[in-house]
Length: 407
Image (cartoon, rainbow, N blue to C red; front, top):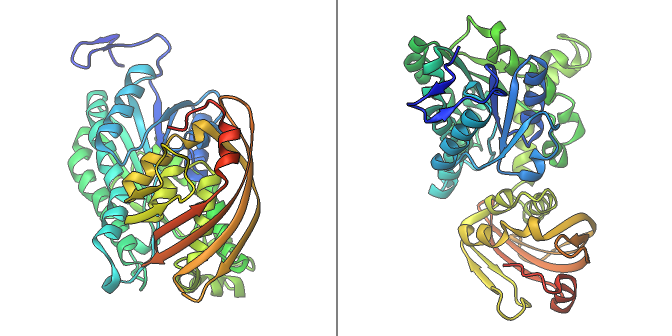
């Protein structure tokens, strides 16, 4: 039991604080949300962290919502300290955030490798650094990450991604050696393919038939994190989902599932680097109001142009950081409800497509309708957007915004 006052920590424990607090990072996504709900069912007081505030808003009221981007070490520490002071020191940490990218080893770029490591490995380390002192003080704790089958079994075409997940799996074992003497267990689950809307958006049904549900992965995570996983530390547990194949372990579906990684790669390599697919994924991120995900689709040196931008607003943005800063407040100003039309046209250049699309929504501060049509030119290099040029009607934008400032 923790004391009512901890001068070293500099906070007083509130009477409403729980002695069984779980912190779920990535709680705005399908897997993180499932983990958060199941931890509540297991008796924990849960705080959910995600950079996607709209995803967090889908959590029920009983789960504390803490917006934050754990890829930033300072933010990771800040959210852990906030949860410790407002809810209670975490007994459980589950980190579900991650990203995916394709590309073979010979074409990998420093930017691609940095992005995979920054998202798939960095937050696990930064969050552990932040939460470990609280767990050491308690004398116990459990930390669980999400690795991948491709961390242990190499497949051509996902060099940077598989390296980052292999590093995460190795980090589990290093942390186990360092933290187990203080009573802190560190484990990971290693799914192959999770049934999420993003995966369903580009993988065929025959592949998705072998995907594992977020709820099933969440059950395993909660088992590891909770009292039932007490004997387990330093483990990376496979969660490939083969046993769910129709027809049982000797049926044709199971036989096909054995070759699933290759089939996934064949489909991903054929589609996801194409300009049309990257453009669709950018629209998915736009509609989900996840501006960080939108920016992550761009190369570090991306050039974004808005030739019809109103006077006093940027018509050109250089670099991924600049476009994220430009977009980060967009969801607070304009709520896009739907993309009600979309046509994507190939060009005579295989790296470029043209999109015509329109949206319906409203301006949040004044309630005005926001109905806009766009023409967008997208150029891709090495699986990332390198040039994004977009045209819209500046008069329609001005009429919708009225006196509202976008910047």
